[in-house]
Image (cartoon, rainbow over all chains, first blue to last red; front, side):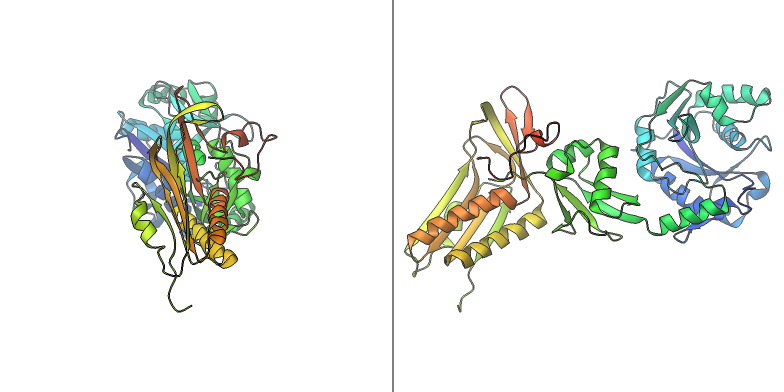
Length: 276
Length: 160
């Protein structure tokens, strides 16, 4: 169920100076990053918008989406967030940067599930420096006034604002989900990594189903083997069963923990059985 | 062998109709028939059990169950084999698993039946959740694999 009062915003108004190319248009597995971000966001919010500078509205990558243009120019991401909160003041905003190629649906779902509506912002704690990450966060309608105040004081840095505000801080279920891309070198590393990222299906049974809270999920992962995948899922869902007690099945047949998974494989981790 | 011998492993959400299943094992050449019924018992490891839930990973359970039955027929030279397992919620006393074998002589029928139930408990991806009188519940063979992995019984050695 999506919350009708939760809108989504992908920030694409940056100048991408270090990249020297528009980050929104950088492609991973053949799809521009802006479209990838919107693909993730759209199923989770009532409406999704692209935040643009006024002169970007008709740019090819952005033109197909509803957009909100900055009110104050040259304020960077904070300007985009401010424009969204001002244009639709009754709505909360799930805000995403346009340079997070490793972001996955699970990270957004976790953020939404743990949203603290009584606070100004719900955000993740950076896995590198422990500070709030403002560019994958939910801004409540109540955040508008403090942001206006902050802008009026001549401040621009959203991280600094969040580190001084009433923020619900969450730990990232996937530590690399918010790794961002600023340079050509970082892009080529991400591009290569995502080129071999797999879309995998996972089915859960018995105790693992109860702990994961679902019987099926589809995910994009850099895990190569079932062993890698279980470790990732164990962290994300807090699975308590140790892998040495489990068997693994791939595509409805028993498999090996160290086989190389292929895109589209369905993996099942089998808890100790107890038929009869 | 001219006729196709039914080797049937099945999962059922409704009570097992053993009379019907038994008919599939009748054969004029068979002088021995052995069946095993596993029932829902009212206690396990000192705790009072009120009911059970069985859950299966059906595609693999059917495949693995079928492999066990094929192996039993081959290894013991029996004529017909069948195993049906319940899934879903079961009350005390209900029939949870049914194994039957028919053979020319009784000895191989007994051996094959024992082999099948042991292998099914050991290998087929079916899980059992016990609901206890004190309101607690637990997945059999799993609970001790989480917090304290140092004490682990090999799979399949616990009795139902």
